[in-house]
Structures are given as structure tokens and as C-alpha cells.
Length: 452
Ligand code: HSE
Image 1 (tube, rainbow, N blue to C red):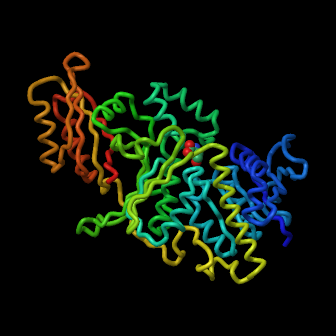
Image 2 (image 1 turned 30 degrees about the vertical axis):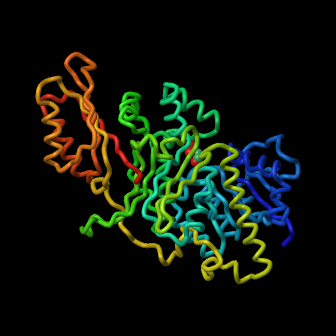
Image 3 (image 1 turned 120 degrees about the vertical axis):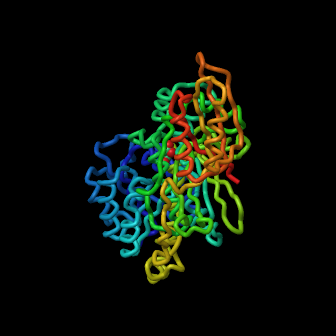
């Protein structure tokens, strides 16, 4: 092997271009840290670009690049789940290590891809797939490896957080802020992935697997986006000392004595959290992940969650790890076996593959959260009593209540915050509230978490 590490970049969008810029900017630092020259030998792009160094081969045949003898590490940043999957599988088959930022692909096909990589003794590294530039994969797989993780909660979509922040702080309209997020290179190719919570669900599936040692199960993540959040609810929440953030949660539940309710909650949704919580003050494109583990306790990781520089930083951190793996190949052929030498390599999903557990993922009705309810009722005697009676009959503990003067003739909004309750119980109570003659609209509900 020559002293140089040869990279191929498949896709020259925001992230691919960011990686090229990072290597150009920090070339010396990369060499001082790794002891190797890191060079881009090939890039996969549909149309020729004149702003690319003439030493780099531009090729529209991406499959050929994935198998090229002139490449040690393939960086996949084209996105999507079809061609990207074929390319990664082809690269693995040809003995290439892979670095990818493709959370959708890994969340949906990661079990298969990681098994294939292990069978071929190569790595698929994916730091850039979750929370942009925050090194959360490395932290959870390595730095927290001695801990038992009980739960995590994270702001894991930069576009969504940017939109919510701009709406709250500046009262800007949703569509206007989304366009700006697209211009800044934060948003997915299909921005509904950002605003409907799908991108966050992809990332949560990855985080949950490395937190609990369970296979990837994106299809079981409960998913709500931010499109239904109104300024009215943002303001009521603030009045009561809370802030609405779009969060992903992965929580272990012991079932409180009922084995059928033991398992893992995987959910992404808007959530009221206390205004003074650190997560409540993570704004703009920043992401943050709060991890509660034993014996360490709570730790918080924060940084830019999207954009060229942040994502390129994570991609190149993976490349630097792989440079060391490639280096060790020179010294010790045996140590390159991922499958047979768990001790030398961090497993793809943090736990050795044979030890992944079949802990069930809980259904939405089994999940336990607090709630913010907004109920609109005719202004008549006993309305509040009727609503609170239904909640108390369902064993739901009210934590705060706010009744506003009539905002339309004869109608009052009533805001109620509850302590944690099983979702099926809340569903029944809301059904009963909506049947009251005095109720004018559907009940608006947003989950609430004290993050304690
Ligand atoms: N669209 C994603 C976000 C990019 O806004 O977080 C980073 O994964």
C-alpha cells in the first residue's frame, strides 16, 4: 500500500463539496494527525465540474468508482435509498471501507448493509448521518461504552429547529423560513422529510440501536412533524414556562410490573419542555442530544446539526478513523477482520452483532408522556368542571390549568398540562371530552416532558 489514502466521493452536492473544501483547508492538519497523505482520487458526478482540481478524476460511472483500484475509502453522499444502496453494497463487495451521511438508507437497510460489511471485513462509518457535526455516534459507541443507557432525547433535525426558532423569535411564516433553510443547504432533497419528522425518525432509529443494542427498526418509530404547530400553542406554552421543541426520544420502560408493557419507546414529536432546560435553549440549526446513562448520569452534546461544514467535519472524522484501520492492515493482517476480532473494532451498532437483543418496541398506545391539551369550549357554567372530571376519572393528574377570556364570542380556550399518563388512557379521556356538548373543536394535544 502506498503511503497515501485514496478517497472517492460519490455525489458533489452540499456535503460532497463541503468535504472537498475541508480537505483543501485542513490538509496539513489531517496529515499531522494521521501521518498519511489523504487525497481525493475520484469523484462521481453526473456532469463535469470545472471547479474541481484537475488531478481528481471526474466520472459519471459511479459503480466503476465504487470498485476502482485507485480508491481505499468510498464516501457516499448522493443520498436516497436505491442507487446509494447499490453503490455501497458494490463498494463493500470490492473490499472498500465506506463513509456515508445517508441516514435514510441506514435506518431502512442498515441491518443488511452492516451484516454485509462484516462478512466482507470492512467498515461502514456513519457519524455524519446523525446530528450533523456533533460526534454523537463516537460518543455513544465508544465514550459511553461502559454505561447502561436508560433514555435519550434529542433535537436531531436542524431544519426543523431553525424553522421553530425563527417562527417563535421573529414571528416569520413557516414557508419563508423553510426556503431559507433550503438555500443554506440544511434541508433534505425532499423537505417534507424535515418538517414531517421523517428525517428525525431515521436518526432516532440509529441512536436507539446504538443506545440499547437493538436492531434498526425505523418502521416502528412513532413519528409526528412540526407542520401542525401554531404560534398560539407556542405562546401558551411560553406563558406556562415551557417551550415547544421537536424532539426524538428513545426510552427503556420496565413495564412497571407488567411484562407486556416492558420495552423501548421510539418516538419523534413536538414536545413541551421546561424553558430553563438546556435543550430548550438550543436554537437555530443547532442539534443537541441529551443522554441519561448509568452510572454517568445526564450528558448533553450540542452543535450544528446540518450544513456543509458540520457534515463534512463528521465525514472526515470517520475517514480519519478508517485511515488508522487501513494503517493497521499493514502491520497486522489479522486485525482487519471485523467479524472475528470484535476486540479491535467498534461494532457497527455498538454491541457485537450476536448480542443485539429482541427487546420489543412499544406501540403508541403504550407510551407514557405528559400532555399539553388545548380545549375550546362554549363559555358556560360547569365546562371546566366537566373537563377536569373526565381527566380525574381517567386517573390523569392535572399539573397546570389556564383559562383565557373568550377569544371569540362565547368561546374560551382552556389549556391543561398533565403529569405523565399512558397514551391509551389519554385517548379515551380526549374522546369523552370531545363528546361534551360544550366543546366546540377537536382537542389539540402536544406531548410534554420534564426531561428529569
Ligand atoms: N436535513 C437535515 C437537517 C440535514 O436539517 O437536520 C442533516 O441531517
